[in-house]
Image (tube, rainbow, N blue to C red; front, side, top):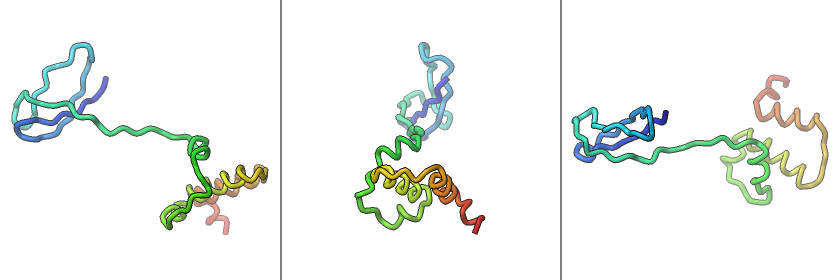
Length: 110
Protein backbone atom coordinates (compact mmCIF):
# COMPACT_ATOMS: atom_id res chain seq x y z
CA UNK A 1 0.00 0.00 0.00
CA UNK A 2 1.92 3.03 -1.21
CA UNK A 3 1.55 6.53 0.10
CA UNK A 4 1.49 9.06 -2.71
CA UNK A 5 2.13 12.76 -2.43
CA UNK A 6 -0.02 15.26 -4.31
CA UNK A 7 -0.14 18.98 -4.97
CA UNK A 8 -3.41 20.83 -5.50
CA UNK A 9 -3.27 22.99 -8.64
CA UNK A 10 -5.77 25.66 -7.48
CA UNK A 11 -4.51 26.27 -3.92
CA UNK A 12 -0.96 24.83 -4.00
CA UNK A 13 -1.44 22.62 -0.92
CA UNK A 14 0.70 19.50 -0.68
CA UNK A 15 -0.62 16.37 0.99
CA UNK A 16 -0.21 12.60 1.18
CA UNK A 17 -2.75 9.90 0.47
CA UNK A 18 -2.64 6.18 1.31
CA UNK A 19 -3.68 4.19 -1.75
CA UNK A 20 -5.17 0.81 -0.92
CA UNK A 21 -4.99 -0.60 -4.44
CA UNK A 22 -2.86 0.52 -7.37
CA UNK A 23 -5.05 -1.11 -10.02
CA UNK A 24 -8.06 1.07 -9.10
CA UNK A 25 -6.70 4.41 -7.85
CA UNK A 26 -9.21 6.53 -5.93
CA UNK A 27 -10.38 10.02 -6.87
CA UNK A 28 -8.09 12.33 -4.90
CA UNK A 29 -9.43 15.64 -3.66
CA UNK A 30 -7.52 18.35 -1.87
CA UNK A 31 -8.18 18.25 1.89
CA UNK A 32 -7.66 22.02 2.12
CA UNK A 33 -9.91 23.41 -0.63
CA UNK A 34 -11.77 20.27 -1.77
CA UNK A 35 -10.61 20.70 -5.37
CA UNK A 36 -10.12 17.63 -7.53
CA UNK A 37 -7.42 19.06 -9.77
CA UNK A 38 -4.35 17.50 -8.13
CA UNK A 39 -1.02 16.38 -9.49
CA UNK A 40 0.93 13.37 -8.23
CA UNK A 41 4.43 14.36 -7.11
CA UNK A 42 7.63 12.39 -7.25
CA UNK A 43 8.66 11.76 -3.68
CA UNK A 44 12.18 11.62 -2.29
CA UNK A 45 13.56 8.16 -1.85
CA UNK A 46 16.34 6.73 0.29
CA UNK A 47 18.22 3.53 0.13
CA UNK A 48 20.71 1.85 2.37
CA UNK A 49 24.26 1.40 1.18
CA UNK A 50 26.30 -1.27 2.86
CA UNK A 51 29.78 -0.58 4.15
CA UNK A 52 31.26 -2.84 1.46
CA UNK A 53 29.50 -0.73 -1.23
CA UNK A 54 30.84 2.49 0.29
CA UNK A 55 34.28 0.93 0.65
CA UNK A 56 34.46 -0.16 -2.99
CA UNK A 57 33.42 3.32 -4.21
CA UNK A 58 35.79 5.30 -1.97
CA UNK A 59 38.78 6.85 -3.75
CA UNK A 60 41.50 7.35 -1.13
CA UNK A 61 43.67 9.40 -3.49
CA UNK A 62 41.00 12.09 -3.85
CA UNK A 63 41.59 15.15 -1.64
CA UNK A 64 38.96 15.69 1.05
CA UNK A 65 37.74 18.82 2.72
CA UNK A 66 37.70 19.31 6.48
CA UNK A 67 34.09 18.15 6.88
CA UNK A 68 35.02 14.65 5.65
CA UNK A 69 37.46 14.16 8.53
CA UNK A 70 35.05 15.45 11.17
CA UNK A 71 32.87 12.37 10.68
CA UNK A 72 34.55 9.43 12.42
CA UNK A 73 32.69 6.97 10.19
CA UNK A 74 34.46 8.41 7.13
CA UNK A 75 37.87 8.27 8.77
CA UNK A 76 37.40 4.59 9.65
CA UNK A 77 36.16 3.81 6.17
CA UNK A 78 39.17 5.60 4.67
CA UNK A 79 41.56 3.64 6.94
CA UNK A 80 40.03 0.29 5.94
CA UNK A 81 40.12 1.15 2.24
CA UNK A 82 43.71 2.44 2.41
CA UNK A 83 44.90 -0.73 4.14
CA UNK A 84 43.12 -2.82 1.50
CA UNK A 85 44.63 -0.75 -1.35
CA UNK A 86 48.11 -1.24 0.08
CA UNK A 87 47.56 -4.97 0.40
CA UNK A 88 48.10 -4.82 4.13
CA UNK A 89 46.24 -7.37 6.22
CA UNK A 90 46.37 -5.80 9.65
CA UNK A 91 44.18 -8.47 11.19
CA UNK A 92 41.01 -8.43 13.19
CA UNK A 93 42.48 -6.20 15.90
CA UNK A 94 42.81 -3.38 13.34
CA UNK A 95 39.15 -3.79 12.36
CA UNK A 96 38.12 -3.73 16.02
CA UNK A 97 40.06 -0.52 16.69
CA UNK A 98 38.63 1.14 13.57
CA UNK A 99 35.08 0.08 14.51
CA UNK A 100 35.57 1.41 18.05
CA UNK A 101 36.88 4.70 16.68
CA UNK A 102 33.97 5.02 14.27
CA UNK A 103 31.41 4.40 16.99
CA UNK A 104 33.06 6.70 19.53
CA UNK A 105 33.72 3.82 21.95
CA UNK A 106 37.46 4.37 21.73
CA UNK A 107 37.10 7.59 23.70
CA UNK A 108 35.47 5.68 26.54
CA UNK A 109 38.52 3.40 26.80
CA UNK A 110 40.95 6.33 27.16
